Image (cartoon, helix red, strand yellow):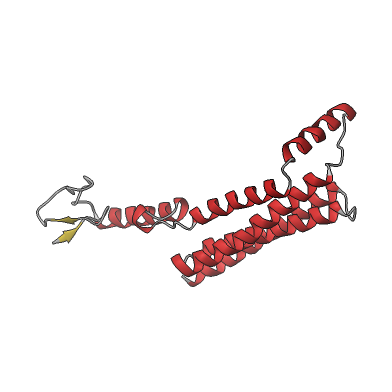
Length: 190
C-alpha cells in the first residue's frame, strides 16, 4: 500500500484522492515536496502536530499558579498595597516608589517564574528532546531572574527604577541575539 503525501494515511495505488484528507494523489513530485516543506515549516512555527505535542507547557502553567500562591501567601495585602500606590501616584501626578511589600512581591514573583523556567527547560530537554524550546525557556529564565535581581537592587536603593528597565532591556536584547546565534548554529548543523 502507498501513503498519502499530505497526511501519511494508507491509500490504494489506484486512488486519485486520499480517503482521509482528500488530497490529490496524482500531484507532481515537486508539488508534493513543496507541500511537505510547507508542513514542516508550519510545524516549526506553530508547534508539532497533535500526536507530537509537547505537554511540558502544562508544567509552566502549574508553576505560574504556584508562584502566584506563594506571592499571595507572603503578602496577603498585595491588592491594598497596589491600590494605595496607584492613589499616591494619582494624587502626586508623578511616579511614586511602590510600598516595600509590593516591591518584594514583584521580586519574588519574577524570581520564582525565572527559576521555574529553568525547571521547564530541563523537563523539555529530558522528556521531549526539544533543545531549541529548552534554550528559549532557559534564556527566559535568565531574563526573569535578572529582572528579580534588579528589583532587589531597586528595593535596596542601589539603582533607580529607570535603571532597572534600561538594564533589563539591554539584557533581553543580548539574550535574543544569543538565542538567534545559537539557533542559527543548530540549524546549520541540521
